[in-house]
Image (cartoon, rainbow over all chains, first blue to last red; front, top):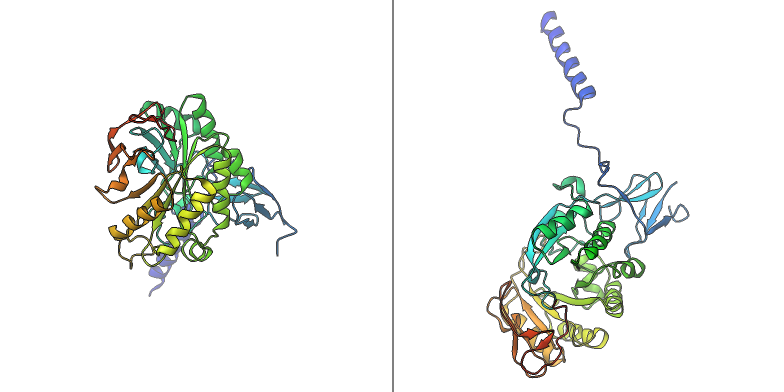
Length: 52
Length: 324
């Protein structure tokens, strides 16, 4: 691979990495953080003493 | 650090920060437990109430039926596994807050709201809040549940719902362990609690070939209902169809359902029914005193109704149920 093609390839990888890293087009929606999906439960208790 | 223990159902899940309960629908955020599905049903339908099945509750009316993703049981034969065995982020959910559930039910001329398909235990808060609003608007609240819930939340829920149908899946601990990954005793306790609190109770036993179809099991189940719940609570025997993780079994033979129906009557139960068997006499309601046909059903359709003011039209015997 000559120098020009090598630089093109590296540029392509850099651009792809930038898109996926910063734009995150395929990232799944944040789980459970729709405000109308959350409601604090009533029946639970703290249990650090039971955790392994 | 910040580990919580859920106390809604007998599993008593220990949930670390960011973790989920066994039901997939509860999570620990910052040391508080949250339901993940409040106001986000993944199933919304208008169904005949006979489909649940409720045979002694507002016959021939429509139930506005909702469910969210998740379940605290993992039955091998679950017919709703695509929503019950998934977390809410894997289902298509709507925004339908409690007020909207009630207004939609009224708009579609439903007489009741049914919390069903998966299990209302795991969308407890949504069920409770919606039920309160529904009561104010004159709508009935009916639950279709496995009954795998702790007594305290069940008792609170019984203050706002009027009818519960419990899936009484089997009469042995082994059955519940191997079929449902659960235990039997909490379900028995739930049915006793429901009955004691005066909420209308109906039960369904799905008969699965080779699993719970023996005469011994069916008779034991009928005797338990007779002795602990009473002869006037309807017991529906339902037919299994290959589903989910039990695709290798055949459907329940009609003869097996007829046999179960006969056993229930022989053990003294007044209202035994067969389900998923077209044209079977077990689809109908008969007067326990004079044997007359009171309600004739074809599938989910009521074709005759001879119950007047909650009584047999012929002999005047009171027929238990919610008829208005």
